[in-house]
Structures are given as structure tokens and as C-alpha cells.
Image (cartoon, rainbow, N blue to C red; front, side):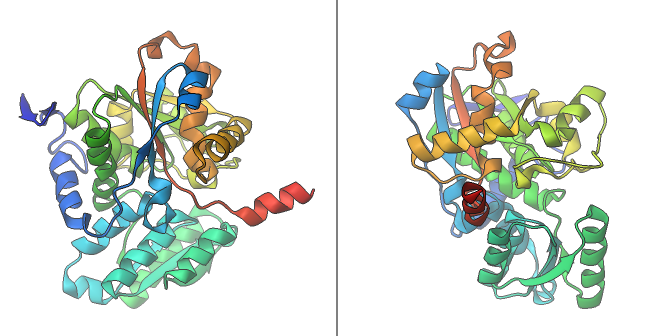
Length: 340
């Protein structure tokens, strides 16, 4: 059963009640956070179109508040709290953009944010947390240490625990990207999304396939952290004991709320090498004139990859939306590499 909405057909039957979020919760999130977020631009490049032999539309979430799409979900989560919950603050564990986003959203509401950060987090992202007033609490680098530390802080302070991606409020907030993107570029037949824990791609897939059921949603993943590709192939969540990739924002594993969406609604996972990600970053800098972190450049890397270009399943992907998910580049690391 479909319901006409603007120029798209909204297929509610495959969404409502089946997953942690749906088009209704995503539209509610958009109404809730609309006055706080940036409506980020969509840019194009004839040069990159010529290289790819396709029309590309870059959704610049690197220009979002906090430098990444994560502010959408964090803002929705913070704004969803009642006054009693908010008074005690929020806590999360994150090595990157979610940490900064939650800190900023909490600052805007005037409540405490306790941020558990592993000791190997990029310095630029730690600095963002501090800049936005988050209270940094260090943990060991393992996920178990991160989770245990965050739970302890929550128990001691009463702060509400907000997971970086496995949370319906987060998923709904990230889905607002699709609401904007399909208004800005309704001709899209494909969207390519970075995948890690799955909060972003879950929201994007739920919203975009509700608004346009024929659209393809593809995930882009680094080879050194390809648990999503393995999970899709196995039909169950696969976790990796170790990840190794320049894309520091794409090292998490899928959650029990995000996996069903990825399993059912993500059409495929494109796996790319780190060298391809770095090359895509270079093209973003040189051609788009946009600073994009490795995790944010992976969508372009996927479109340029031989596995995508030579796959007959995607020969009709002619109008492709690419989400540049963040622009928080650790320049110190790049300068150090250059000196070597």
C-alpha cells in the first residue's frame, strides 16, 4: 500500500513497526531539529562526472555543525529527552564525531555531556569534544572498556546513555539527510553511504526507500573493517577481532537495531582499499575544494572502484548521491606523514 507524498510514492507498509525507526519518526526528528541543524548543500562536479561517466551529487555533511552528520542524530536524541532526564545529562562512548556532536547538542540545551573516549582517538576529534564543553573520560581502546566505562558513568551520575548508532533516536536523526537530499536532488536513482555501526545508513535507507521505493542504497566500507560485507554474505552479524583502516570513523560493528535494516534494505556493500580512500580524499580536496575525512570520502572511492564500475548490477546507476559524512581530518597526522 502506498501513499502519494510530493513527487514520490511513500511505501509505509515495509517500514512501520518493523524496524527501530520509520519515515514517521524521521519526519518527526526533522521537525524537532530543523531549527538547530544546517541544511547542507548538494554540490556537483563536471570533472568528477566525466571521470566516473555518471552524474554525482555530493551531500556535504562535512559542513554540518560539528563537522559531520552525527549532529543530526545527537540533536534529535538530546531534544527528545524530557526535562527531568535532561537535567542529569547524557553519556556516550565514542572515538570521534558522535562524541563532539553530543557535546555540542548538550551544550545547546545547557546540560552536562560525559564523553567516554578511547586513548587512541584522533586528537582533532578529542579537541572538538573539549571545544564543545564535553567532559572527557578516558577508557582503554577495546569496545568492552568503552561500554563498561560509559555504563559506570551513567550509574554514578544518572546521565542518560545515548549509544553512538544503535538507538532509534539516532537512526531517526540521521535519516533526515535523505529528507533533504531527495528534495534537493529528486532525480537520484542511487545513494552511496559510508557504513560502520549502521546508524547513518539505516536512517538513510529507511527514509529514502519510503520516499522512493525504487532507489538503490549501497554501503561503502573499507577492506580492513569489512564486517558489514561479511555480515550481508553470512546473513548474520559478523564482528571482527581487529580492524585496520585509515577510515577511523568506520571501525564499529553493526548493532541489533541497525543490522535488520542493513540486512533487508541495503542493496549491496562495496568494499574498497585504503589507497582508494586516500585518492578519493585527494580528489575532494583538488576538484570539489572540500575537506573530507577518510570516512567521508569512501563513497566517492566506491564509485571509482573497479568492483563498482565493472558490476553489471549497477550499470543503470546514473544519478548517484554520495554522502560526504564528515570533514574532521586529523591534519597533524597528515603533516607527520608528509615529513616522513
